[in-house]
Image 1 (cartoon, rainbow, N blue to C red):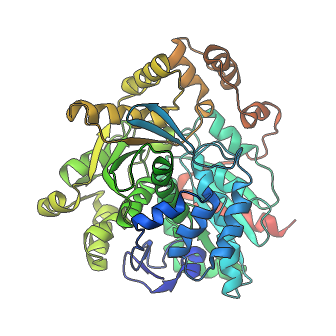
Image 2: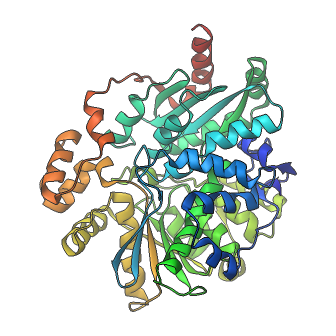
Image 3: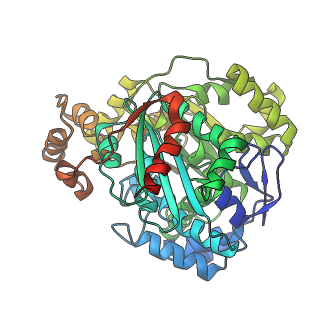
Amino acid sequence: MQFFSTRGEGPVSGAEAVINGIARDGGLYAPSSFPVISREDIDDMTDLTYQERAAYIMSLYLTDFSYEELLEYTTKAYDKFEDADPAPITKIDENTYVMELWHGPTLAFKDVALTVLPYLLTGSKKKKGDDTKSLILVATSGDTGKAALEGFKNVEGTEIIVFYPRAGVSDMQKLQMQTTSGENVHVIGIDGNFDDAQTAVKTIFSNKEIVAKLREMGYELSSANSINFGRLVPQVVYYVSAYVDLVANEEIKNGDEINFVVPSGNFGNMLAAYYAKRMGIPIKQLIVASNKNNVLTEFFSSGVYDSNRTFHKTMSPSMDILVSSNLERLLYEIMNRDANKIKELMAELKNSGYYTIEEDILNDKFSEFLGYFSTEEETVECIDNVFDEYGYLLDPHTAVAMSAYLKYLNETLDEDTPTVVVSTANPYKFPQDVYKAVSHYEEADAQKAAKKLAMFSASEIPQQIKELKTKEVVHSKVIAKENIADAVFEALEKDGDK
């Protein structure tokens, strides 16, 4: 299969799309078509392991890889998870299910893709005969950073630099990143928000002088954010697999429609669900859940994307985003792959922070999307109520999604379509907020809050959280957001002095 940039560049192969990360014209790579999964394919997949399903689905897009190669990658990647299934489904009530995507090494959904991506990248470079070093640049709102660091640390031929908002991630997220060891890892805080970091990283990719200078140093740029298709395609897998699991467990019949509710910030996770629907998975509604930074809620109800608004720091920091990069891929599809139109819209966004989709396109093309947002108070209430009623702990991001689902049910008068709420992080990554929500007591210290939460909820603190208390902080650098490009070269020059 070939891939084209949303802004016109291409075609390139799957391997090239993975290596490049982002197209040189600043666009994002999209597949030339969507492979079809039939009802028979769904039945056939019920007997496959998750690793086998993943290899099969990825092989439909990454056709320059064999199924056997991809199965080797998925097997090695998911051996790092606590059990054989990286995306188990828990039934909450008659029509509500939670897909838990946080059973990997960093306790966040990013692990499902970022444990696979290093294998895809190194395999792609071998196919292209490329012996340059890969420089992985990552902007993170919390979870991507640690998952990318864990996936790429000590991978031969790579350097990884992660930028995170110094005051915009949870204590546990920050500690996870700051304590990461590895000869090739760099973690840098910025005085700014995620949008600042993401904009700077994307600018570096499109700056010809910076790219040329990095090449002189022996580096080719790539990305571990969901702007990289190699990161996106493993995410498509778990939506397909969730449907297959519901069929296999006789919760639904093959062909029945289901809904997905996805906590959304940069829109990559929801885009993967949309891709699964385009492939033929019977999805009725894609419910986009936002926190107080509700730019996506307004977009899907009005067609107006306006990032000129107050930026809110919330208890769900991975969703504290005003410029959702992966929305560009969705626009590319609904605009009939008109790259010139996408360039116009992205130029408007860059210059004014604003663009508008025509009403007829909104009504015709966005009918499967519904947007809801939750206030901080509603998120806390949802964590508390779900624990009281079901004994189930939600992290703040998943609570935003569950709250959105409850609003949807209220609007549709308890519509009974089976619905999967996507759970993106272990609650112990946010122990202060979760403990306060369920106990109504405060504890400022993250480790103490984790202990109190464990006692209150009779649940187990994950080992990854326990060990943070004794790990050494090895990355403490913080820079101004204007200095991100300079920091990249400083990190690489220090590496050269080793």
